[in-house]
Length: 243
Image (cartoon, rainbow, N blue to C red; front, top):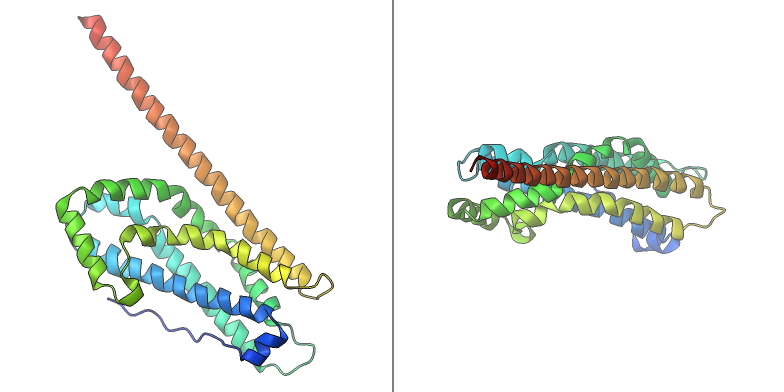
């Protein structure tokens, strides 16, 4: 399996985190982002790429299951890279008027909010992905191959494919919650307050847009099912008329 790209994650001492409890949340954002990228990397290199190189699953089913996961890995890797770079650079600035780590984290997420719209496609496709995967698992050769992929994972990476497929949906929904916790730990008069509010607004717009798109997708699916059902009824009626 391809190696996970290396990231130099920033860290803070217990004294620093005691002085500003918000650093605990900043650390959670950075470390959980790294864990999430590891999960995407495992899903792609532990499942998608082996499936592409094997005939255990129909080739046309792969985009239905994985959607644009590879794009999400690229987007979130860039996000984490910028987080690490910005936070490391901020620590080197010895200036009483220097901006806080929270301020820099907010700036990074605000600048990436537009690219997070790519989660629209993934999240609206997720019900289809689970349906196609469930059908594929009924076929013994496919089920056996996916079990092998799972066992090739190491340590915490030994998850079933379905467990990885939900990760992007969970992650994009968690961003606003993390920033709301930052807001809760920040006094209204603090200079970071306004930027945290802006970041929450941007991230909640992303999730609202995703929910809207997902709802439209599910409506289209229901309409298609209804049309197919009505088409079947028409055929039966026509068959009856011919007799």
